[in-house]
Image 1 (cartoon, helix red, strand yellow):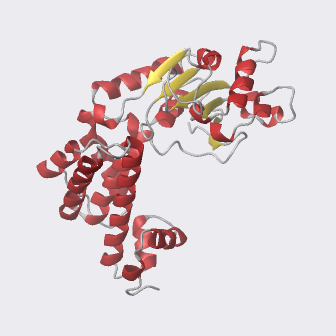
Image 2 (image 1 turned 180 degrees about the vertical axis):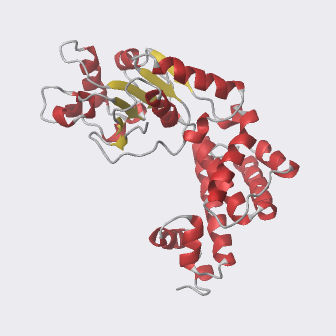
Length: 316
């Protein structure tokens, strides 16, 4: 049975699921516990608050809970909390009928820590109002803990009490050491299926390099590394992944974790594009096909990373 997955306050086009679903794979005790939690919570209608760093698979966990529930055939709708306004949570407003909360299904409030105080207050009133119960099951995720944050990211105590009847914390990849190689192998296989290159085996040096990095960018950073392995082959990708670890060690004392993750992902993306352009003699259309991005997106990346000189060799 395919679950509908949509974004925004209403209903969008059905999708197969979130991009970070690989986060739930693996054989570590943490991965097994996450899957057990999913099965347990899917059998209930309780609100759930999922907490974790960016890229740890918070949306994947929420989608899996919905997918195993008795309402799996109903829409799964993601509401980006940064864009939420108080009127969306007010049954007396003109926007309520357009809200996914007013219809059966599951609603994920994504990045609750980005929601304005006014919207948090309106949502808390809605959840506490027995006269106007939500038709949808509500799940939420946050990148900050309930009792921490700054003035801009503070979560209201009454809201977290209503939404956080069950709190699930997803560990980052650096705390799932046993899963890193398995997740990387699964991702490489996925990317290699769509590539013309044969699947590169994970030998001892590659496994050591993967396990030696702490992956501050979590699943998105690991996905970039897997694309490098699938596209470039083992020899070149091994040096690349080793350099990721060296760069992280060099910058760890001065760059916050989120910034380090972003920098590592951008460096990885630049190197992949550079090597694929070289391999295709600067032919942008062939490079875009191998990278599985649009021609327009590749042109933007070439400009962003200053790779015009390479792409001018044989460019169309």
